[in-house]
Image (spheres, rainbow, N blue to C red):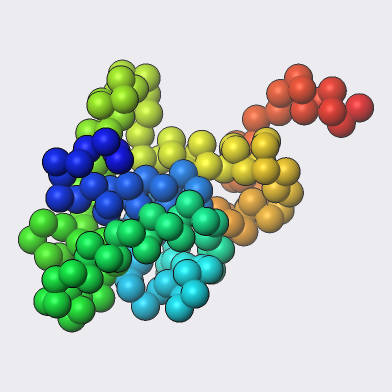
Length: 169
């Protein structure tokens, strides 16, 4: 994404994919983020999940930097100050689910990964799996991060590997 310097939306697209891969949020949650959902210090984002349930997601340095870089571009247009949506389309409207899906597929194609079954939801799945396997995030904490009502829903993201079993023993 960062090598796509010809795109006027490079910073936006990079922020979108970075948030997916680091926060594991749903597509609808990302599209629904407003500017005022980001705290002043860029430490957290408030998202609205299924059933209109709100939760706070703490963001890491990669997300913080990507958001700050995007906001520099977004806020360069004074007209954008009046718009509540964080991510805007080329027509200065809240970005749509379809546009976000198109963005993700565009960069998957560019990376040669378009025929391997990847999707927007796979980015959420990847984030959750990495948090659990390499980030040592407890499955109950992961449940809250993902906004799941039931623990058994979260368990589909926790692939147990031979190395996990070896470490446990």
